[in-house]
Image (cartoon, rainbow over all chains, first blue to last red):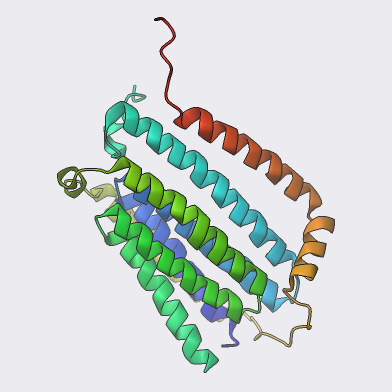
Length: 100
Length: 169
């Protein structure tokens, strides 16, 4: 497959799916997974353009994206555990203490 | 042959994404996301990005998702509570009226843009040596900042997740 647009279309679909999951789902774990999906769609775009312009910069950035995703999921999961200890629920609608 | 592989990987990646946001059980969500990530690694290999592909399988489908699965099993939510999760009505509305047009515009612009097909790639394109040279010369400062970020995230995760010790005893 030599057309970059096919890869970019896959990236757009994955990003849209991740955004939809982020908006629709209430389970905070699934919300975190949706964010991972969006990050991966961005990574696919980086690698596709890296291939179009035959440059390694996109690959280097992919490395940065993966490290960022690991840090994000570590903090996110720690937050989920802390919330679950307090509330015994992982539903985003239940967390309304900060609402004025 | 490679064409068929592209469609297989793209189909599995998208199907895994759809399953990840539509299945109720978070455990199966995470597993279908692993499937999607492995298929994405296949797409990376087709883009002549061997190093990112291996990183994707080892770090994403391996380490990060195992961490997620550990947390899901650690929480061990009862089935009834999981099944009464309500999906957000506003979220569905926003998805239909914002995300579908957004995706349509992006894909439409992309297909009308003048993007050439992939040209021939140099032998060392995507090799670990070439990526490492790029990362440690042109992108050294982002790399160093990212290592600071990871240390902060690690310390933060430990502090947030550890049990609170009651002090006034």
